[in-house]
Amino acid sequence: MQIVVVTAGHIDHGKTALVKALTGTDTDRLAEEKARGMTIDLGFAYLDQSITIIDVPGHEKFIRNMVAGVSTIHIALLVIAADDGIMPQTKEHLHILKLLGVTQGIIALTKTDLADDNDWIDLVELEIQDLVANSFLKDSPLIRTSVETGEGIDALKKAILSQSKDMETELDRGFFHLPVDRVFSKTGFGSVVTGTVLSGKLKTGKELEIIPGNQKAKVRGMQTHGSETLSVKMGDRAAINLAGTDLDDLFRGTIIAEPNWVNSTEKLIARVTMIEDTRWKLKNHQRVHLHIGTAEMVARAVMQDPLEAGHSGNVLFLLEKPAAALMNERFIIRSFSPMETIGGCVVLDLNPLLIRKELKSWAASLKENPSERFKQFVNQNWKSPKSLGNWARHFQTMESQVKNWIKSEEILNEKGFLFTSEKRGESMVCIREVLIHFHEKNPYKKSLSQDRLKAAACFSTNWLTYILDQMGDELINVEGGFALKSHSVVLSDSDASLAKSLENSVKQAGYAIPAAKELSSENPKSTLEILHILKGEGKIFEVGRGLWIHGDVLNKLKDELSLFFAAKPEMNVPDFKLLTGTSRKSAIPLLEYCDKHRLTERVGDSRIKGENCG
Image: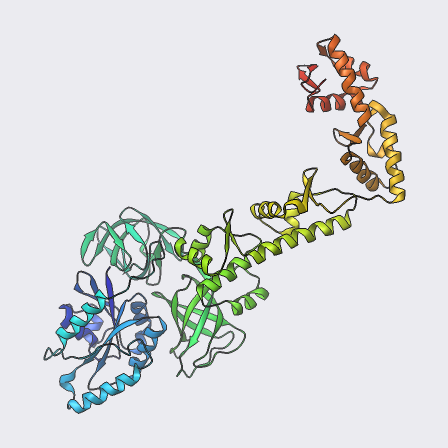
């Protein structure tokens, strides 16, 4: 695993000179940096083949560059000059490191040769210990150094190597992604980007996606620590030569990633923790600067109550331009003007697909704990549950991590869905209520089709199928639809009388197969409903579209067809008309019904005996 060390500290405290003493590399590469004697942008040097040192600017005007540098680090090197002591950017840089979740670091007390005496240095060290007492640097080495005399340089190098060996392996998200911190064009090669690989692996020839913009590019070649390589992995500093993209599509703040894992976002929900000593309040509709990964963007905060110094709360950020961000990613929030670091954030949700009214309450309710929040997402999407793989992509993490959340939150994984037992129960209640309402409104209809049931419940097709199966004996499948088993059709006295009259009329019509309007001119809707009830009871049958035949008449037809085919092998339309004593208007639908139910089989213009003809 490669380790990234980043300097932090006030301007002119000797960060660049210290890096040069450690590595032999002058990280001030810009002409303006040489002329002004100050670091403006990120500089890079190598302590050995596995350790990269990023030198960041200390001036308050270049905090955006500093945040871009520290967003991808393993070890912080906090640099404080012995002659100056703690200064404003010392504190701001330490705040940023803490807010980004850095857990390991070393303190270098530089320029000891310029301090008046050891008593002064002892006093500065006491101030430093007070400063870091409640931070990750509390028990970290504090090493006195001087690039002029060489004091402490070897000790500092050993401390960096020691912490690098003890570095715990970070959680891999399972897909390649790299926040871009430098972009340049090289003659004969084209576009080159550099950055730290934050997860996954990458090989030459692979296709990548550039976010925002979702442009595709292909990896032409790669370098790490100045040497050509065919692959890079999580933790590596990498320079990647991309083919198939314009330099204009690439800039500090873009992410290059394995396709279909990272999307552009224009709104995100985050947990914001305000710095304890900030003079700012975060208020509703306030414009702020967000520093996410290597990117800087302007956003507007949407929230219920203001956040004061030292307080935490959930905030919806509306970005002024599309940007790239990842779930559970830490980032920095700074005031709009004048720009000051005011807090740290963790991404809770990206591109929430909710109407504005629901969005505020959803944002306020989200938990910071990933497993608890995962359960919230599972419950929110209960009408269209997702698979384990889909949730892994949603949270931009490995399936093994989702499995851990499933176990800790008692989430069920059945039939390819993730859901809670409570939401399965709610789904059953929903189906029950839809059918109760349907039966109340349509007392004479025996069932509701699956398509209409799906539309009424707003379920996905697969989830509806699963819930119907889970309801088991509570439902019955009737005429291709579903009904509650407890539901039965009970006709009123008047409708029972109409049913008897309709059945007799259909029976008396014989082979004439009447339509509903021929049977009753009063209330055609009730007539049709009762005809379907009689059909469900097996007393009458529908021939073609809306034509009816009595069961006794149909049985008689089967017998007559059997006798006919016993005497003759084929039947034509005139034969059938003669057999049934009907006109062509009734004969053709009857013959088509016989074909469909295999009482007859059509061969050209004639019929032969079907397999269901006795």
